[in-house]
Amino acid sequence: MNAITITSYNIHKGMSPTNRWLRLDGMKNALQQLNADVLCLQEVQGQNLKRAMNFAEFPDCGQHEWFGEFLSTQVSYGKNAEYQHGHHGNAVLSRHPLDPKHNLNITVNRLEKRGVLHCEVYPDGWQTALVVLCVHLNLLHRDRQKQYQAIAKYVQTLPSDVPLVLAGDFNDWSKKSCQALSSLGLNEAFVQAHGAYPATFPAKLPLLSLDRIYVRNLTVQTAMVHAGIPWSNLSDHLPISAVVSPL
Image (tube, rainbow, N blue to C red; front, top):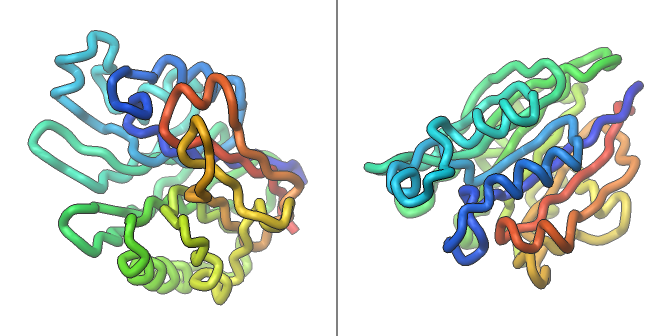
């Protein structure tokens, strides 16, 4: 069956690492060059009235819609954090038919509103849908442990024999995600391909492994971190990709 490329990227609300400059144009051009089949994006700004006033080039629509129109993809957005001047969350963009399913609330404290966006993608030539879960977890390990439990409970409700991707910003600098997710039959794409987790943060000098792509019922053909220019001047995270195919 045809292999597809999954890319995960925390876009930092379209801002530079220091939040001084808007980097959306650079991001959309760089993402176009990647030509991924499925994009799992975190910290996507659905609306921000303050930045719309401060930056003339800030889009009138949600960033997920803006990226989707430029990249000619189908889009699903899960709102996680809402405030007076806007909201942000996760988004899945797909070149293949996309069926939005659910946005699971995994918030465990009032300061970090988090979610898991569930979509199903129908790649060309595949005999079954691909379950895509786009996630953004908390900064503290004790909070992430609770979120792993919520994710595990949700994944257990899904068919165990379908191909599945769980991708996003795990904030897992201590590299303990594998302990929580291994019981679900999920394998990290970079560990399978290279024997180690990818360093993705900070973008200019990546030292920490915060971003992951976990798979189930899929063959990982290759996995890569997109480092250097232009990525180091865009978000504070680097994007990662995995090329996968059904077993």
